[in-house]
Length: 102
Image 1 (cartoon, rainbow, N blue to C red):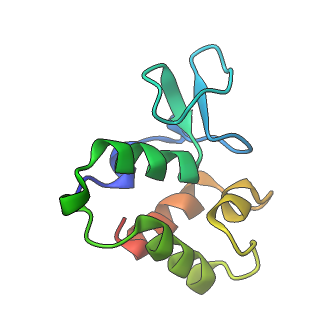
Image 2: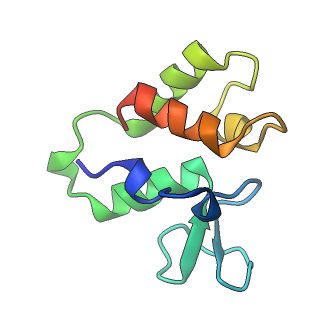
């Protein structure tokens, strides 16, 4: 399975408070071709859109939620809450993705 890290390769490709942004910095669909930045939820949606269902071994949202609960239990109960939390950095997002195996 393709990794979420193939979408969120660098901090410049990550965003907060919106699923995805285009090059003008305007919100867009996470699966839109014009998207160049994604929040963690948006990156997973893009991954799922690009990956055939037979190649998805487990639901990435569950894997990520479990990793967040383990590593950052004080940063909200959802992936979006974690991503948008004021203390969450790109380094934290990468750590969660790696822990989840997503």
